[in-house]
Amino acid sequence: MHCTIKRIEAMDDKFLIHLDIAEKSYGLWIDRKDEQLARDAAKQIRNKINQYRQNFAQSDVDVKDLLAMVAFQLSMTNLQLEDKNDTSPITDKIQELTGELEQYLKDK
Image (tube, rainbow, N blue to C red; front, side, top):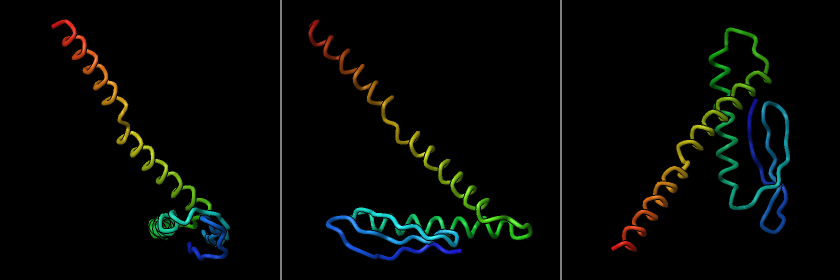
């Protein structure tokens, strides 16, 4: 099982990459600016699969199970980052304080 990306064909600012994950091949069109991100994502998937494979080396775990565990772990991480980066409570508080300050200055 491996995860590699190779450049196949260029088309303006997008190009087709070939991605192998768990012995299956996928062709994806990506923006040129996202090439390194795609390579890093493929590497992360490969590393996570290998990590789970080592953790479950004593049992007969199917590749689909490994991919499900990787997908779950990456989704959890993504949701944690979304919560961490949610600035709406701070923005709301700033707007509230700005309104109070404007009202105070008007009353003066």
